[in-house]
Amino acid sequence: MDVLKYEYVFDELKFTNDTYDHVTLHKPTFILDKLNQLNEPICWIDIDCLFLHKFDLSLFVDDICLARRDPEKKAPHASVVYVANNQRAKDFVEEWKNRCNIQKNNPAYEGGDHSQLILTYQNYDQTKVKINQIDNLCSTGRNCYINIGVSPGGVEAENIKYRKFGVV
Image 1 (cartoon, helix red, strand yellow):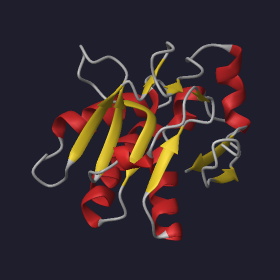
Image 2 (cartoon, rainbow, N blue to C red; image 1 turned 45 degrees about the vertical axis):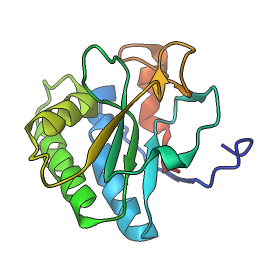
Image 3 (cartoon, helix red, strand yellow; image 1 turned 90 degrees about the vertical axis):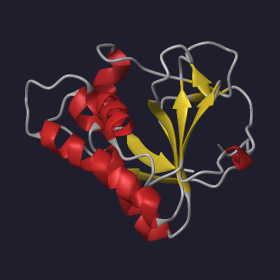
Image 4 (cartoon, rainbow, N blue to C red; image 1 turned 180 degrees about the horizontal axis):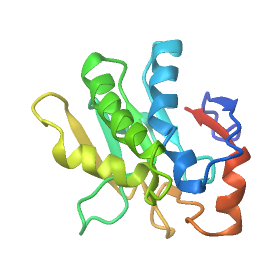
């Protein structure tokens, strides 16, 4: 982040009793807290992502901009989430947060924030918010700006309980 000259904020949060999926459910709450604290648009980028190329923040022109990892599936990915500092965007993230909060109380839940983001995107009234999905923003390959990091179940996933949350 320093090399690319992006301004960023990290807060260290401890999640010692949560699983990988349950830790990720805190993401929309953190995003909303930072929107209100910083009072400016933010871009969430998962801490385990690797920047392959600097991208121009002018890509983010709508209320919500989401990465689309697989253009064929047409489903958003939660590794990179831009949120404008307006009520329309906050309402969308609030809905995502509500879906995640329901799952926090379900010890058997497996799916993390990503599944809840997809459900929010699919079921949210799209006339209330402008959402853009950006192809090739992030991927597990090299033909993108940001390489997606860990997957659930690996050693890295277990260590996420102790990682920092942050926004650009």
